[in-house]
Each structure stands twice: as C-alpha cells, then as structure tokens.
Length: 223
Image 1 (cartoon, one colour):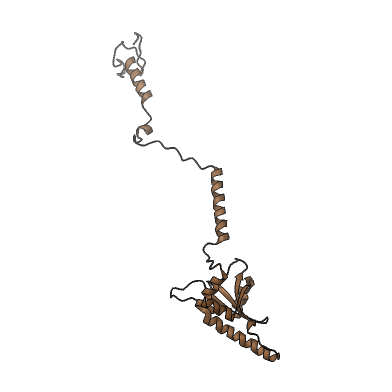
Image 2 (tube, one colour):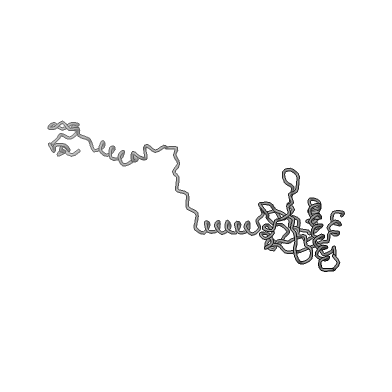
C-alpha cells in the first residue's frame, strides 16, 4: 500500500498497514486481500448453477423429425389402408370351385332346394298343360350365382355371408335359397328361402354362372 493511502469509506489519510481508519473506523483491506476476494468472485459460479444437482445430466431437446420422414410414413400408411379396403380380408371368400360350393350346398340344404325344385317343376307342368304342350323336367335348373362385384360366389344377406342358389322354371320366374358359408355356434348351417324383397336387394349384383339339373344336383351329393 502507498504512503498516501486513503480510507475508501471517508477519504481520510491512513497509515500504511492500518487495518482500520482512525477517523471512521472502517476496515481497511490490503491489496492481497482485495485480489484474492476478486478472484473468488470471478471463479464462483452463479447461485442458480450452485443449486443445480451435480448428478443431473444436461439434456438437449429431441430433434424434431424431418418433414420428409413424416411424409413417407403418411404415404406408407395411406397405401396400407387402401390395400386393406381393396382386399377386405375380414370378408370370407368361400370356396373358389363351383363343384366345392355345390357340394357344401347339397350337404347342408339339399332337402330344401329339392323341395323348391319340386314346386318349380309342378309350376312348369301346369303351364305346359295350359299351353297344350309337354313339360320338360330339364327346364328346372339349379343355378350357382356369382357376385359381379367381388367376382366370387359370396353374397351378404342380413349380416350373414351366403352362397346364393337360384332355381328357375323356364324363363318366367325363379326362386332363391341362401346357404351360409359356415356353421353357426350350434353346429347348424343357416339356409333361407329369399323373399321377393330380399331377392330385389341382392339380385343387382347376382349373375347366373353355373347350373345343374335336379338329377345333376343329386349326382353331386353322391360323389
């Protein structure tokens, strides 16, 4: 400290090495003390940093996905949804072979179908008698209908998936029987003769694809 040192509090002259001002009594710091104090202040971290958990690791925000990545995921998802809608894997497709379909139909509903065919044959005979001509049993045909929308033999009727069998008697009229694709929980196969209104609903997508005579239908059951 120089000989002309002054008190930092009141400005009075003080003797070098004095620890207190003789005028105001303020504590006098030496140059070494002030230097040490200034160094401590410079090296001391801010209070907020001193309070931080020393074990806490610094984290950086997760980088956002690029717009290109998001767009690719959206395209893949859209393609998958379109594929599901086009194929509709939850809809049963049934047998692909007409003979297999008719074998299933014969096994589970041939009594009903042959009864309807009998009605049709009787109607055909009555019409022939009225027209003074002979009835031909072959005029009664049993058709397996194809779905023009799905290109298979499966139709939906009242929340059930069925094969559609049409029994014709010439060109004038016909009957239809629906036979379920699988057994119910009770072990039975649902089959049902369609009403006229049900036929109107389902026939828009139905086409006569294959047919059998009554005798040919019986042959399927004997195979």
